[in-house]
Image 1: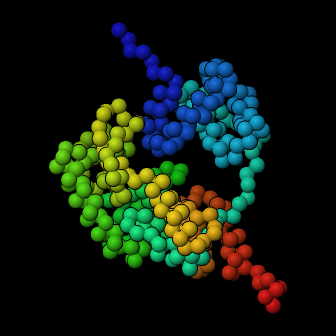
Image 2: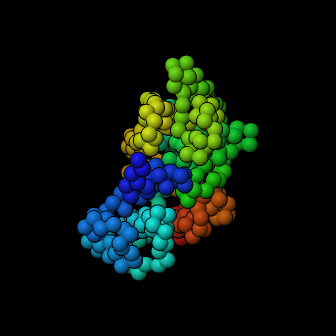
Image 3: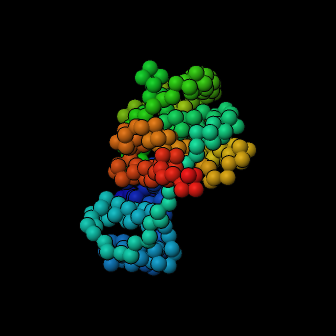
Length: 322
């Protein structure tokens, strides 16, 4: 008896996991591929091609009024589908692109950064110190594993950052003592989990196959583990693991701290990454160094911070002040 071929969306999930795409990307790609199929009255993508892709993307821009980044995400999902599963790579599409808004990032002054940090404590404090001290994205910080923290060289290794690339960034001296104490408590929690028959953590698909027992080892544990054990929705096995902390807990703590500090700007965890880049630029560091620390593929992305600086303390002096 032959086994039934997996459904298309299940094939998409499997292919993404084999290629080590993040869970967030997996959910996003599956969502957009499903929307594409539904928009075309459940026709199989194999029966469609460039005209249908262009029509769907045009619909997103004109009718659904999505952001440029959302439209581009939908296109990436469809390109993946046709390239990896249908063996029909799409070379070029001609569509109406959503207009990309030119927003300057929200940046805090050093005084404002201190005001927020002074009103944080515990794990949220440590996370924000790393966001501001190393220019990390919040998910990059929460996905740090014990082996990614190098106290000797005072650096953090960011694995599979945006674009799937690894990079290193600075580990601030100021956070080292409290981070070491934090890891001591995390290690005690891990030992307790092992004693109770747990202590396993999710690993990238290829590593999990190559090193079957690595998920119990200390160096693979998350620096910021969740308080509760949970099941990985990407795994067929019904195994309780300790995942990393959810970003919402940090987001809520930052929002409360900013409000308590009386800051009226829209402050999120990502604001500290923007502030990191801007303050380095103000301190005289070159744009290429900042680009490497942030993990930007194109220096044009990093150049946005020069606009912030030019309109701020190092920019034009108002005639009113004269």
